[in-house]
Length: 176
View (cartoon, rainbow, N blue to C red):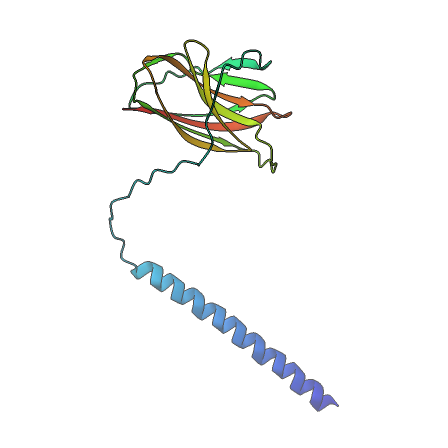
């Protein structure tokens, strides 16, 4: 009986030694590969990605949302990146920007909240000087390019129609 326990005990010791030595060899191998890896300076490819979102057009007066103004100015050819909280039932608007037909507004909006919903309570878009809005809706994040259809003054907006405050990251760039 004591011999059986001794054999079982030695078997566990042998298995533990094999496992620990395998882990040690793997760690040494990985460190060696990383140390000898040659880094190539390859040019980064810019891939444009937009979400396939339906664009709506409307004059939505009276959305009953409080408006917060974005303090940063948008300059053509330069991207602005902003991270800030957006209260529940609030709309964030930029200052007016004079744009020409054919120019593109690249808009990316990410929320810190992982709101898993099927509704589309996250809205972003542009407003022309007559108050006409072109916008897209999604549950959480939005990546969309708006093309200016006629010369005029425009604002970019983001709405949080959810019932709780969220933190958003916005990237806006105007390109020809």
